[in-house]
Amino acid sequence: EAKTHGPGRFEFFDVKLRERLQRRLGLEQDLRRAVLNEELWVAYQPVVELGTGRTVAVEALLRWDQPVLGAISPDEFIPLAEESDLINRIGIQTLRVTTQDIAEWRHEHEVPLQLAVNLSARQLDDPDLLVTVEQALRRADLPAKALCLEITETTLMRDPVAATAKLKALRTLGVSLAIDDFGTGYASLAQLLRLPLDILKVDQSFVTALVDSHEAEGVVGGIIAMAHGIGLIVIAEGVETAQQAGILRRLGCDQAQGYFYGRPESSTTWMPPEA
Ligand code: C2E
Ligand code: MG
Ligand code: MG
Ligand code: MG
Image 1: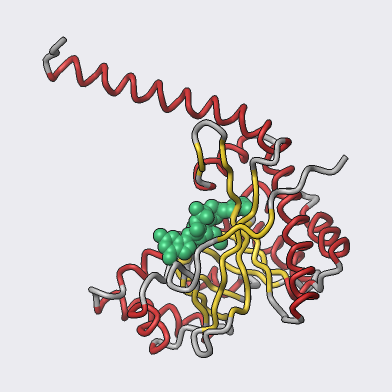
Image 2: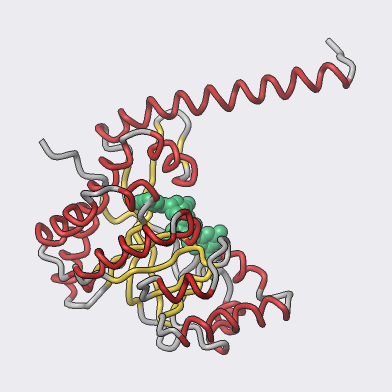
């Protein structure tokens, strides 16, 4: 039956809100089961050296194929996992599986491929993080320098002092550290200088803006110069076209990642959890 716009709209929003809450509640319960059910798996996306086109690293990106709803984005399920203890389980499992995959890869192909793994805010806060990372490396027999841990600018800026201490501790293991999604948070240059980092990943939004905007080119060029000034390697995220790649190369960007070079792809399925 036809409804007037006024009250109908309220009802519409109410339904939408209820749907959202229901989806979320359902997903939260499902995620627990998914972890035990091999519905989670890791995709790998190549990171390419802009000068040579050589793949120097791969980033591990979690995937969840929900049997009914299909693929659920990590942007949706990682925050859900963070609200429960599940993130610890998922984080440990991800580190374990990916270090083993890459160790095998390096062995088989005799290439010094690096592995990048994303860490969430709660993982960074976890007092067991160092032990977890160290154990994963030891079990896989992977040298620490082959592992890069990525933490978003937003996560680092929640509590820059605590983050700095944590990164320093992680660094003693010999792993490298990257600030992810750079440009989407509010890190000051002073804060950036204090963080013990090796890599700066320029957020995709800047790369997307490159082609039609000279201002964007100026900004990205500035970020690259600044990062190089403090000794960081720069990776551009979300490179989708040859044109973007060309501009980034000209701006002196070191490495790039994006659909232009390769999409995240499955190479292994999620391993069953330990007994
Ligand atoms: P991120 O770490 O910044 O990863 C880059 C995201 O950009 C990935 O999205 C990737 O698939 C996507 N991407 C790469 N190249 C392109 C491109 O050329 N065009 C476009 N449009 N997108 C591109 P994805 O896989 O959906 O992951 C989203 C975010 O979820 C990640 O952002 C990361 O913050 C988080 N995440 C993924 N896996 C994990 C994990 O194992 N642990 C934690 N804590 N977070 C994870
Ligand atoms: Mg990342
Ligand atoms: Mg990113
Ligand atoms: Mg991101």
